[in-house]
Image (cartoon, rainbow, N blue to C red; front, side):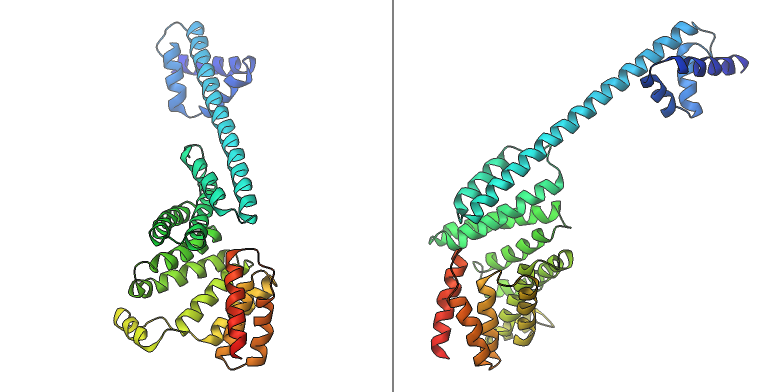
Length: 321
């Protein structure tokens, strides 16, 4: 026992003369079990070689810590490099998206995804994955006339959206595009399947709004959900009542509130939002107010394919008023 205490005193005096790396080893090894292992290896508890053994143990410990530090530094460098590559890929894809070059943006992110994601954080993965889901939707819905190709893209988009939610449940965009992809993919499986998933679609839009109430598109999407449910014909309502004890229910007034909320958050962000405000007013019998919004949609300078669709539908509705 006396020899052990002498050994401890010796080592702690020795610590002051050693490099800072050795000091860190001692700091991490203050509990008695680790000291006992060090002292035993050095021969201070067993009457062994003493000082020479102490230096050998400390040298090995310092070398091991330096090796571990080198691994950690290398890992940090690899993560930083991967984050930089991710930011660059996202920037390029977003630039292509703004130019309405959806196919090119999709191919770019697909190539990036194929490079692997072992060093990519979950947050970075989520940012890439929801964009891939969005591009699958844009290309499949507006970029092809081939139904089989569109259906294939809807399945691919669903896969990306599901993985995006898994990687980034706290990311509003992941839930927004999950809801959109569920709704779109259901179109290839019949109305019954869309009814079955209706609450799931709504819940993802609600989660998106909870995570980012300042995103106008999320409010618009919830408005579209309400409008769609309000427009369900009686025979489809019968199907819904068979599937659910309480089938999906909404009103045009509720839909209008969500579209107006979207407009308040970001005025003029989306010509389709103007179209739906006008459509709600038509359904509610406010024809003069409907004309105001339908004309805005009809006169909008189109940027994306959705704008073209909104413009054409607005023109047709104006003719009926």
